[in-house]
Length: 359
Ligand SMILES: Nc1ncnc2c1ncn2[C@@H]1O[C@H](COP(=O)(O)OP(=O)(O)O)[C@@H](O)[C@H]1O
Ligand SMILES: N[C@@H](CCC(=O)OP(=O)(O)O)C(=O)O
Image (cartoon, rainbow, N blue to C red; front, side, top):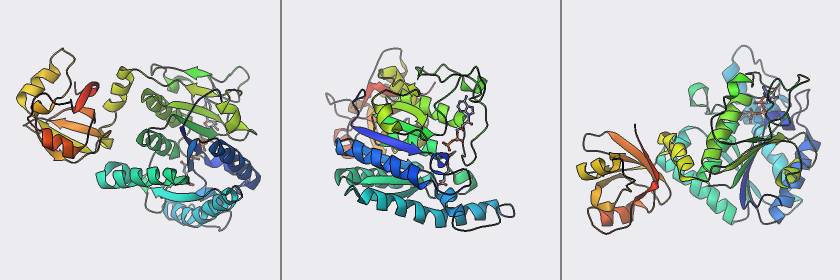
């Protein structure tokens, strides 16, 4: 393998597994499952984020989508998800692989208990060699509760599980530097950093059954790569696409992961909503942190733990006026932090490299 990944999240867009007439494309799903099984057999952990519930529902029932679009989507997804997961379950079974269904909402990433429950469950499923098949819970995710699309969901799952890579399969070869159908347009092979403004060449148009479009994919990919996760956007309609992407043998767009601490800091800056715990810091710690010196948050500057967290979680640093001073990744959990509150010569709770201070 050209890329030496241990854990990958694969996102399959609705269009990849849906024929033009709206019916599920069973041969395509079968071919993708064959590849995922082969990847898994090599010892790589795979989490699948699959769209397609609504499209599958359309193949089973006709609903009046115009009169109540929300109810129609709920009905289609509720019916279609059963068919989708049954198809995956049956296909993975041929390889003696178990898959599981994980349906989530945006709220699950905001609520600390939900977030931790979901993370723990996914980690446990991976330990049991199961392939989690994740989709948005379209029955309860309505209007403002919805993810922008499943690309956003896949990015959040990849970050939560600290995956090495996220592979997004769509119905074009990658991100083009213009209209994908225009003669002069070409696929952008690599994107590094987060300076590129996609809105100048990516149109807001979506494919027939897609939701977010390429702009949300690009922005999410950039953010995810800043966390140190490689993001590949490739054409899921092409045969052998997953194996070819992993061998780096096919034209597609790759977002180069940012491995530097500053990249991590930028990502932390966007993560206030994912912050699970919080600690109260004293005036001395606040002064030290906002000084120009590179300072980590030490237990001596912590007054108390406000809300619990685990090692690796993003936590909020709050001052005595309830102001958010910064965000950072906890080096250890809330229990240890409590034991060390106010103590000198203890390991930093948040290392400077993983600390983002509010401007
Ligand atoms: N510059 C661009 N490069 C690639 N695709 C683009 C670009 N601008 C717009 N698109 C559109 O984005 C679509 C893919 O996004 P989307 O419809 O959300 O797919 P999916 O269902 O896979 O999530 C493509 O089919 C294409 O029509
Ligand atoms: N949860 C929806 C998918 C919505 C969605 O984001 O679709 P897509 O843009 O194809 O990834 C479904 O399963 O139909």
